[in-house]
Length: 395
Ligand SMILES: [Zn+2]
Image (cartoon, rainbow, N blue to C red; front, side, top):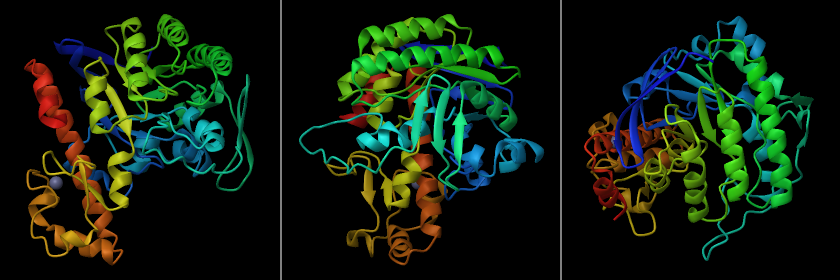
């Protein structure tokens, strides 16, 4: 067991607020964890992140083990010191990257696959560069093409060197297009890896077990029961969340009641507005998602309803000609420093001229927007009015 204290503060049906105490500080939950893949949240400084109210970040073990590598970071005093962030940090296990370099690449899918009316199937992104067997994940480095093995033991060892507050055990993330037979086989592997991971874990870092099982009820329940029986500090729900929002909601409804009430629950890699409401009301405490900063780099700025369009409820494309002379801030209802100081016209100009400041300003606003949403969600749970807030946001 590592250093983690979690206290549920208040409840509104299944939704809950809590205090999560980790080695480097306290987080209010439900919380959206900004993603700092290569030890940086793209286009933002740690000073920006402090100013916009981020309490915790998640970094990527796969990328950091390759560049610069865990030994270098350890010699430089650990990840906190390396990236100048003195609040809590999480590192993932590398399992999700194995998926995106392996099955995700071959199937050209993410954690969810919606073959609906407007769905445009992505082109396969080439052959898998990751192979999985019971020992671990074999892959080629995207930096120098060298062959690497990420085993459950190695993943823990690397994360111990990096020194985040909370670390994840290695898991195999299956694709929404994997069949049940494969998902079941993979589940046994993930369970063995979880046991190996927790057995060799030897620091005061909090350790997180990951529930897998795709979108099959029996597999998800079996996994939740098994992972919950190991003495993890916290639980994450990973892997494929199926082929529809309903599948994702089902997964949460099967898994969450089987996890210890007094430990935090993290839904891995999910974090758009609708999914946050759907997951918080089913009892999820932690999220992480690249979306706010990723869409920022494509020139999309978050906006509160009812200002968005029917198609894009929570975002607007600031590089569009519509905003060329617009004197309003990105979101007239936002109190962030970008909205207090800059016009849409100016940010439109920054995008049109590929000026780097544009990325910083929209990323700042987008993350502020999402963290403000999380603050409103926590307040509404404390006041037992989550459903009212959900209607205000989603209609
Ligand atoms: Zn703003």
